[in-house]
Length: 255
Image (cartoon, rainbow, N blue to C red; front, side):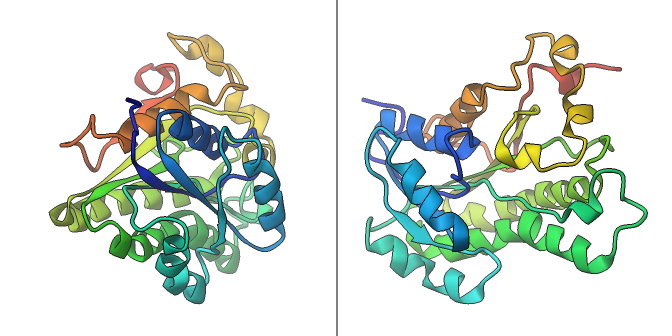
């Protein structure tokens, strides 16, 4: 039996085969899960193409987490492929470049609001939309980048991640009575497509392997994907509202 044998999972954020979410989907299938992916807009066909690189075919459904119609239709779209969900992976984040890369003080509310809606509020939106499918409880896992610090160039995306982490705790409180766990994985810097879109990303990842007691490979999403898979499994039945750090240990080290 695999770690996720028989589980039915909804995974967002698969854009390329370098995406953390892609490796979560791959590991989940290898561990026995049935996977449904989401995408939208111009990315939809790209996600469909990348899905073919998974160990088994995975359907892709339309979901823009800022679109109320998509959120309302999510349960029906999922039911076209699986009859319920045991787990959901939130791997969604976006901020206009105007509020990153050293533009914290110059950030305008309209762009900041976009970052907060897509990168933080969407966790609540996705959880509420998926809840009718999680009739026997389950696990929601999101991906964050440690919001305890003010990182170089991260700026308002860092603020959005702080809101995201707080949102996960309130969801853990409100969904716990339904048997739904909500946890996050805080990964070290990984050179995904999303990371490369951050102006000055090299300032965030600089020196990370040297600071990490276990070392750190910015090109390898596997350790992060494994942590997500573990939290989706039944091996953490009493863990919720938690942030698991997968960063080589940097979070615990002083400068």
